[in-house]
Image 1 (cartoon, rainbow, N blue to C red):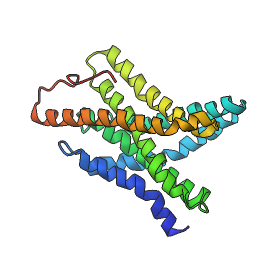
Image 2: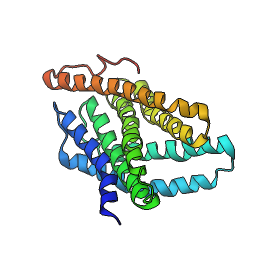
Image 3: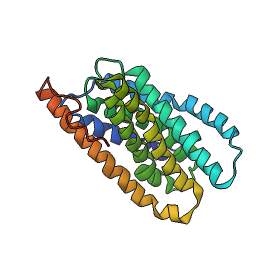
Length: 241
């Protein structure tokens, strides 16, 4: 295994994880818990790959339908379900998850753990002879996993801190369905081979960034208010995104 390729593969995920750790400045999460979620994000790649291989065996469709099945079901739904499962199993019910920004931070850590080992598989093993693959995945694929996770954490926190069972169920469902759909769209554009969709790829990426930076900024402000005001209402600034 080439050391330079390995470093190229792990750098984006670790760098983004560090950025999120530093970003969460008002009520910073325990490093031990962040590492735990990140590592389990890595570990969950194994069952995810098994499930994806099984689902791929049922892909009887051809052409566009086959690409859609792979993008939305095999990759989108399965991967986002497993990344959310890490958070639900290992931190969601832990007292350290005590404010809305935590949902984004932990979902991002799970996703980046997942994305890092996936990046190693692509950059080091599958496409080690393609020099540009590491750069492409560093600026698109790994950040995309992060952006899907921001959306997931946004809704997962709204579910956790909901005041009614109806709200809780509604946001809990959205914490999987919305990132899975976004992930599916991302993969479908790349898999379909449709030129018009490829033209829309960059605008879609820009939309992802703009939308999720708004969510992140909203929860950052909430985190500051949470630390400074114990009576702060978790839904005071909810905008329905």
